Image 1 (spheres, rainbow, N blue to C red):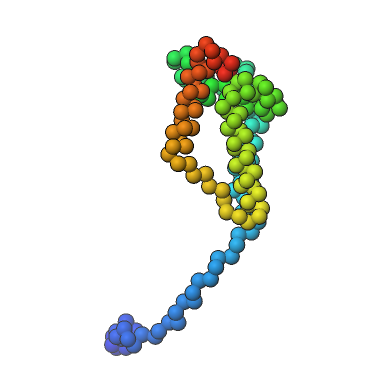
Image 2: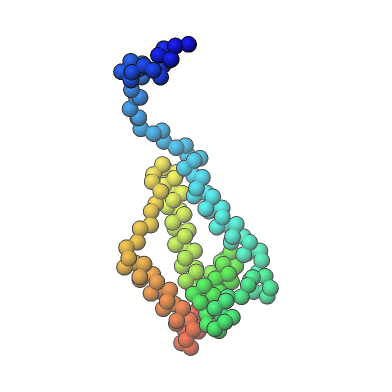
Amino acid sequence: MDPSRTPDARPPDAWPQQAPAPAPGPAPAPSRARRLAAPVLYLAGAVSAFAYVGAVDPNEPGHYPVCPMLRLTGLLCPGCGGLRSAHAFAHGDLAAALGSNALAVAGYFVFAGFMAVWLVRALRGGPVPRVVLRPASWWALGALVLVFAVVRNLSFGAALAP
């Protein structure tokens, strides 16, 4: 076989030309099931966690570990009482949930609101909601958590302690 006859031996301008690829059009819209998959999975995870905490009472000793900060320092962290709060919330006892950890209950409602918005937008084909906080908002949120942690450890803030 003559090496000058192989396709690699031809000059590039003699190679066969391919037709240009068609311009990409708009991507097809995802199906409703695909749009609902992510929010439904997040919601299923949250419901599963609440169901577990609702079934396994954190008020019974030995079911959950003790807060390391409480054990080492005797001080309540911002999350202390969160499991008892989730247990009471899962059983529909809002007063006991607020008494265990009011900040956690506020977080439950914020999460529920975000999930509702996400599910409605997924059903309607809208964009995923984005939570974009400015640095000042993050600082304010951190200050709120810090004030909550300090006040619940003082004598006048005993109502916030679990």
